[in-house]
Length: 325
Image 1 (cartoon, one colour):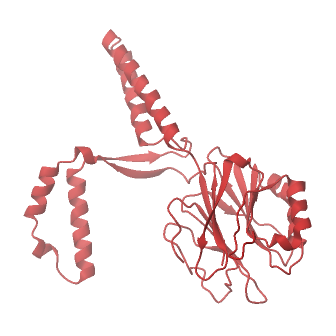
Image 2 (cartoon, one colour):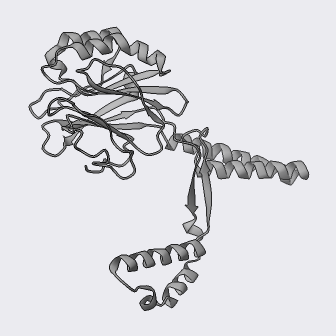
Image 3 (cartoon, helix red, strand yellow):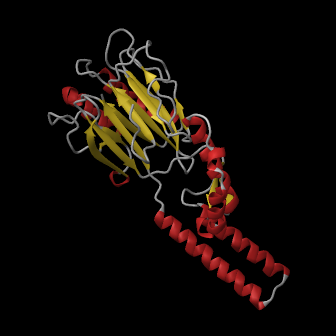
């Protein structure tokens, strides 16, 4: 399985043709969860698989569907703590309208039961063969099909992306076919932020303050013949460890913790500006001079400017790629 493009949060694949003989770890993509699969049980073909970028708060829902329905339902927590109901589904051409009728009748109940504010249905529905049932689903649930381009090499639109989100919050793009598939992949950009798992910590490297002269001196003084011994794997590990140790020694750095309740745009620069503002306020309280007052006001202005920059620079999107293979 090829790695999806950068920024993809959710990957949906239909017509996987997988079965119980295929290991659950098959096709694991680095940086993403294992595939959650619904394989066809009694005959070859069909199947649905979904994976998520690691860190997204997603949950496979226990939904009882008709036996012939090849679909899975997920609850994805958004940045504002609401949730999005995602249905990944494959409807074979000769199956009939039963699965579409199920969605028409049950989506409202599923939204309420699982406390979701919006719904997104993706996959290969072959809905051109059951147009009346499909249009009834859109009308009854107030859904919009956001795909306005062919998704099949013969010109058909078989892979819709339907939701109750406003049209200006969701945009679909046609990608190329995947492997030998005669379907085009669909990239969906949803203008809603997703919540990540509990607080995560990363290292911020201040490269503009690095002591490059000392780093260069240590590199020149390194005994490479002593360091790089053994096979290629051993030498690669030793080389990498040595460079990381020098980086840690000569490049100023600090750990930055992203808190679950932080706004999606509130990153390292905002946190640093907030800490500077708080420090200036403490100084002003301890020593209420005109100078400390002006320093506090200047820190407040920098905090406001930094947050405005961050809000204008970072737009919370969910990127979902879907394809029938």
